[in-house]
Length: 423
Ligand code: LLP
Image (cartoon, rainbow, N blue to C red; front, side, top):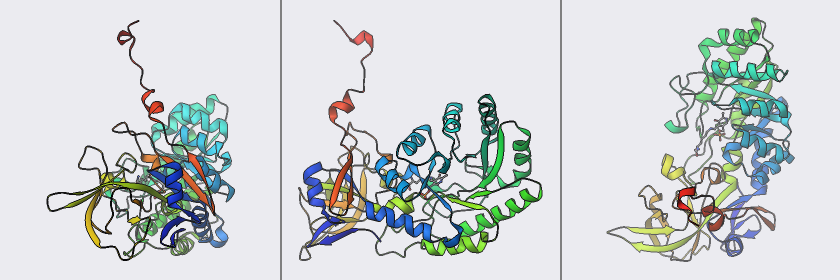
């Protein structure tokens, strides 16, 4: 459930009309709902009842510090994959002891920064990474808490570009090698193994692959403990899918996912960590855009909107579906079937094909739904289009949480080489 609803035929984010935001801030603009963010966080938290897990929001899904601060107030931790994300999480008020550091390519500099901050654990993905972490921690006279991200070789049955738990993927260390890897941690200075980590992919719409991976993790933990390793945390990653298409069957609810986790891991006596991103933020944000033209092509109609693939990359990258809705609802409007496209000079700059919509014209406002995760964070300035604004709504108030980049700010980042500067 989200808080984007029609009131008097005008689409609102909570109690703020999207027309008001478009007028004040311009379009395109990402609009997030505070109530939806907190609701999703609480629904996920409550799915685990007495297990009381640490919920580390995957910052890659939405790294705006206003979003992070909202979740920090709810008690969330953070899953970060770069020094930049770690800085944002800390600055937004997420305590270091609730932050886990994932990713296949952590540099020595990033490790040093994270160790200094005192994060909860490093989710290590390779042997060379273990060696560098050991060297950095030893030099700093510290002990780095380590979880190995195991690759369980499970097919997540999601889009190939966001599947991470098969043996052929670059992520994690094969589950078949845990003995030697944990023995290596024990032998290396500056490291202590405290956990096991797994993340098999994103936008999973079926619980079976999760269950298969988690059963494997439980076996590994029992085995490692029997071999004298003090495994206290299990990080089960993120990945639970969200509904993107209003008419389609929704993915399993957090409560069903929670029950499955309790069934599989209930009596293991481990602190559980989760890294949900999309589930918390995805349906808490929309991309508000204005129709520039309605163009009649050869047997086809196009709505050219002012948002483009640089603002929302998901349809171009993964053929992702985002529902479109007009901001002003007119139930008597004649219907159109059209492609929704952006202004960028690429055919891939297409948000939707052959979509049914009430007929609109230039100047009308629309939203693309489910853009709160992997939306703004994946934007670029391709075609010299400035990064768009972000707004958060809370009840009847709204705040700009990232101003639109000005063209001057964008263009002035380039410097001419000295040989071009003639005095
Ligand atoms: N933990 C790790 C280690 C991850 O790699 C990811 C996502 C998550 C947690 C959060 O997964 P979530 O709960 O959000 O599914 N850009 C793509 C999604 C890439 C996901 C990458 N990793 C998209 O727009 O669909």
